[in-house]
Image (cartoon, rainbow, N blue to C red; front, side):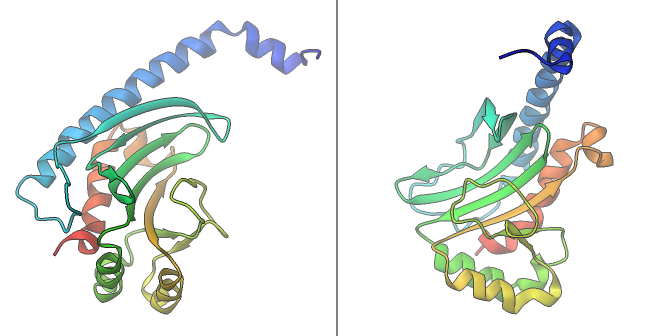
Length: 202
C-alpha cells in the first residue's frame, strides 16, 4: 500500500499530466486530419464492401486502458453491422506504437482472402503483417502475434487464412519513425491504406 519513491515522484509531477493533455490534443488533431485525407482518397474509389456499407461513417475514440496504456483511434472507413466488419483503424497506442489495421469479417471474407492471395505480390513488401491472434481485438505485434507479409511467405499466409473466419492486416509504426515524429500520421495512414487496397477493391 506504500508509494515507492518513483511513484511519489510521478504523483508530484504536475507537468507530466499537462504534457499528456497537450499530446492527447495533438493526436486528436492528427486523427481528424487523417480522416480528411482518407476521405479524399476514397472519393470515387470502388470498394468491395459488404451490403449496407456507408462511406460517410467514421468514429474517433479515446480511452485509458488498452494493455494498461492510453489509446486514441480513428475508424474510417467504418462498417460494423451484425457479423460484418469492414473497417480501417488508425490506432495510436501509448507506450507501444501506431497501428494501421484493416479489419474484415463476415460478408465478403472469402473474396478478400482470394484477392490477398491472388494479388499477393502487390500487397507483399509494404511492411504489412497478418494478425495471428484469435480475434480482431489483439493489438500486440511480433512473434506469435503477427506474420510479416513478405514475398517469400505466400504459402504460410495461405495456410493461416485457410483456418480463419476473419482477416486483420496491420502495419505497426514506432513512435520514433520520422513521419510520426513530424506529425505526418495522415500520410502514414493513407499510404498504408493504399497498400491494402488490392485486398478490398473489385
